[in-house]
Amino acid sequence: MPLTSIIFISLTTESNMQLEVLHDSIYSYEGQVETVRHLAHLKPPSSHSQKIIHSLLKIDPQPDLYYESQDVYQNFSSYFSIQEKHSKLIISAQSQVETFPIDMNKWSNFDHVQWEHVKEYFQYSTHHQWDSASEFLFHSTFIHCHHDFIDFARKAFTPQSSMLNACIRLMNMIYESFEYHASSTDINTPTRQALSQKKGVCQDFAHIFISCLRSLGLPAKYISGYLLTNPPPGKVRLIGSDASHAWASVYIPSLDLYNKLSPGIWCDFDPTNNRWGFESPGEDYIFLAQGRDYADVSPIRGVIKGGANHDLKVEVTVRPINTN
Image (tube, rainbow, N blue to C red):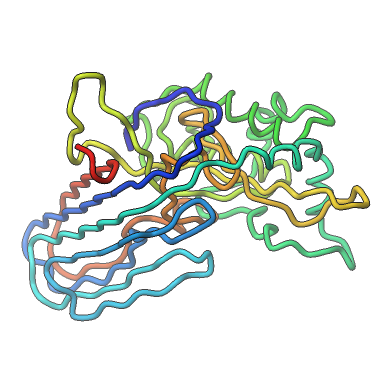
């Protein structure tokens, strides 16, 4: 998932943005496929950081069965099956989204929460207050807690550091010490290998960030979406040249009137671009889906009957509405 890197710590603007996303997935098969059944996460939901103006999913050949639902993480899931024989499948998602600026005033409410206290808050004990963010503490398909992640994260999570500042330092460490290299990993590359080789793509960097948090006993989740990238001065915006993106979100409890931890807020961190913000890294980001890791939010997955090898071509365009 190639992406232009942008050095930006926080974004403070006063106006909303309206963005359009075009996401085309084109499968070309050797021979004919008889049947396909797929589950897609390609339609973004409305959230605290955005409002959906319009969203449409087109599929060719036309499905024999299609329905939408929301999964346990409140993601839009599109299920479809095709019984017609075909040698090419085109899935086109078009969404128009209004995004909102970051409210950085929330920083002061969470800056003094120490990460050790957050870890203690999520340790299970009898009659302890339950927090739904606990689900994002454990192993998942692509996230496996290990001492390698603890050793790396300790440079950022120093004793009595605030949870927020430690996460910012960890994000900075990944951004500064890792090389973005599109061909260095694939979906099956273990996260520990990406950590060791200090190379990867946004998916790897998000998984490493999350693995560090969970290895320390802190909740973090995986976010998929898009980021508006600007062409160089004097160049036109190329259609289909962008890519989907991935970043992480960390749960930070708040302090109540009695200086005790209570349910808090999710804060997003993008180690690929060194940007962060409450509920979104910025209004040029579009939130698509969330889960424990990539396995929960993969754009398209499913099964096919027939055919042989296939080639997948993905074209993504993110652009401001009503501009060239």
